[in-house]
Image 1: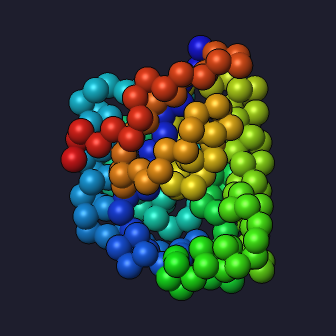
Image 2 (image 1 turned 30 degrees about the horizontal axis):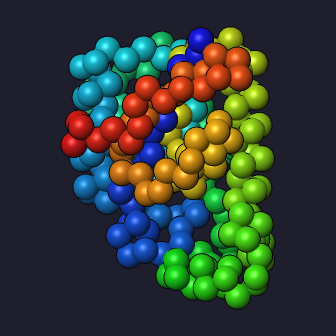
Length: 195
């Protein structure tokens, strides 16, 4: 049985103003503080992982840095960025209010999962990336991995495993999924008890 710890990045500037953000949004001081507290929890609970993979987008990188500052020791494990874990790319709408994206999606007449803006991705594209990551994880030598990623990726990943839409997840929250062949089980989800 494999364990996958899933961290949603800390609160970002884009989260506060409800704008579409792909690359250049940073975490807020609250996001940094929450991520630091998560690092303290991971240390306190003696969580052991074989590797950490994180989205290379700024807010995930900053979240991981704050987790390490909170005392979670990663010195003896593999830690590397993985572009499969990136947030959905809504390039045409970068920096614009989220409502504009959803209005254009509705106007297109396509199901939300199929809508792809100019230069961007659909949720189905993100699900394909999630499948690639799941296959990589299942075929790796790692038994316990922590990922730092984004809300849309997490929702697409969880749907892929057969779970329903999770809705909004807390920043710097922790989830644990066990995967045994074709069977996945939620041990805990969107846990923010450390905040």
